[in-house]
Image 1 (cartoon, rainbow, N blue to C red):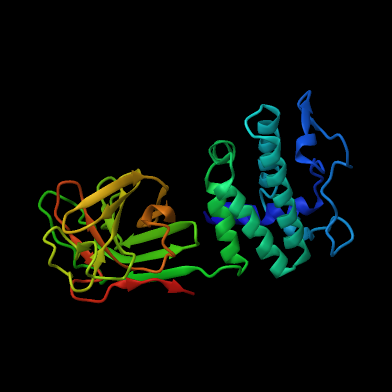
Image 2: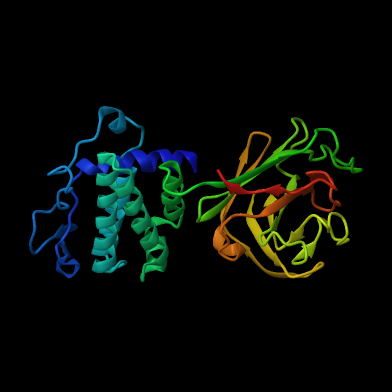
Length: 326
């Protein structure tokens, strides 16, 4: 996520100086011999109004590694248009929005940049050809644009963290090491939940360690699964778990809805998963938790296949973690 965000920021700026095929009317775009042809126009985006022309990027912006990846994105859109995988209207509109965002960022106009990124994100999320668009671009681009909105100060990052003392995980016979929780963070950029969890050094084995993020999305203990385990009493006065996100053992995160005591509803495997130093990092689409705004209460539990809960974070009886705008 961090690498892709750096790439996207640099590449959007780089595009301010890259000519892009565009027609005044999207229906005028055709393809022949692998190249886009316009019935009219000069083959570039219209100049930015504030600059009188295509603005130039600084040497520092241009030197950021892999800045040309967004150009590759443009190339894929053009190829998809040529091959009939995207309609001319969607492809041209998307290229136009990318160009607007690149020029706005290069101009340093924060208000204009935020408006352009919002328009680009809306298209990535709601395009008529959304399924085809995701097949061409990959659905991670919407997440990257949302992260870029946060980094540019357009929208606040919703985030919260919890910690737990090392050395308090239950010793389970036959399991070594026992996954000992020490930290976790839940954040939202408006598109994804970003979940990170850390274990005490020497207690993390990626082949066995698993965690559940217990999310109280309505911050109401009277709804969802009571508390933090199957007994439905431990921490029932602290947390009403509306959704559980299961992370670990090299699988995509699994998100469950919970309607009551041990009453799971729908589940979905979606998002991203990575092993990091002494822990995991995962993302899940925020739509899987009811398109929530990301403000929620949460706790985290650790276990392994075939074990009971081995650690609670924060400890039983303590207040849950809370996410809020930074």
